[in-house]
Image (cartoon, rainbow, N blue to C red; front, side, top):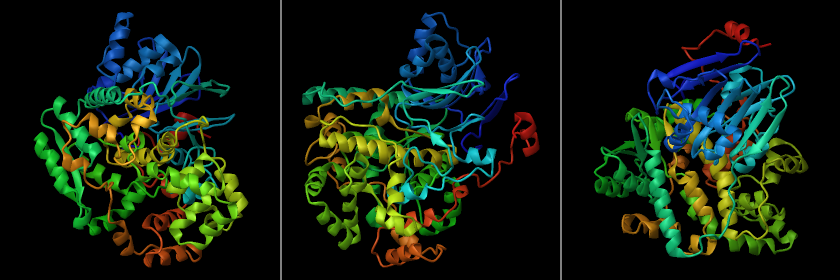
Length: 589
């Protein structure tokens, strides 16, 4: 895991229990050795390993000082320890940030695993009667045990979603800690209890437009200011769209010598350089555009596969932008991720009427349309089964259960049985259709694909990506705005546009939405990918003939890789111990 934490490393081993905590550090707050982890309190009752940032740690620190706590570092890690000593597991509800952490409480003989309100930072665990293993990357489990068994079912949800929805991973009995929750695991019995410390709920507390605009403006400005706190070099991804442009314009208020970067292509139709330059000129930012060519894509493909901690049809764009951020000298960057999901920026927000109409059709007509129509119509089949996941799959699904069953040579019944294991929070019956879309986009696409891909690709290049639109206070405010005000039938993300009408140039918000698009169809067409005979070859032929989207073809390629492909591909030259030393030191069987 040295790529995600190149600056420092440490191990804590308990004297009485067969327990060890390991940490690799990417230094951003308090770059001195005082920020070393694992970190403990003065009495050495608490040991912590922590990944992420607590953006409101200075406010919490002031409160704790008023309670009599003393601090000996400038780090947010020490604030977490004192917060736990003061409030116990209720401390997590005080934090506004992105985090995954493990806290060992010697007094109460328990380990606590916690993950932030939006699941920005990943945290995986395996818990049985005999052992507890946890890490922020799946590759760590394979490093611990190279023979860790594969989850034999992972390809079913992957081919259906194009990513692995929670609680699935490629490894057997390894799952993510749920966002906004902590697990309290008693030692040595390894019995666990789950506590929810934060959950978002839709309401219409804010039900007039002027108030909504004012709240959005204040909360986003505050979020950007918080997210710029860093003792290491920090900058912004600037695509030229509404979200990254807004963040850059706001960041200029709080930071001098602003650094921004973007990616451009030889294909002029995909370049957004014109819009990037508008914002760069307005802010006097030190902006750099990096050209990604087909040749570089081909040469980087092996490294991209190594970087992939879990299979995903997305993430290659995050690989390149993170690579160039590091080359540009940045340790942290701000990203506009989350704005589309919260403020209604996707086309799916305008297809709610379409899906409701199709659901009213008799089942046999839906089956007829999905079986006889062209490939893009096949997703209609998802609406035959009435649940939230299928509403999402109608918009973003890849292969239908019938297609997945054929590709993997299993029964359709088996496919549905596995898909029913996807983690779903129930929504109240009266949720507005567009709030439902927002919830689905946030809990599937953003949670399981965008955030996950962003984290492992950025960590691979020793870069931290921060997402101000997922600031807890801003998210809470957006969830409190009445849907009739929040969404506009014509203008996507209209609240952002109107809240910052005095700041955001017309050329930026009136342009056609592009997204972060790479010329993958052309690039993949020119790369020979070895596939076994059978259904995957059929998919390759369809792709070559432009009958299926490149991402569906890419999914079929990735599904042919074994689970170990998405894990340990290299050994650190600076391993702390040899394999034999590790077994002896940690008493591994």
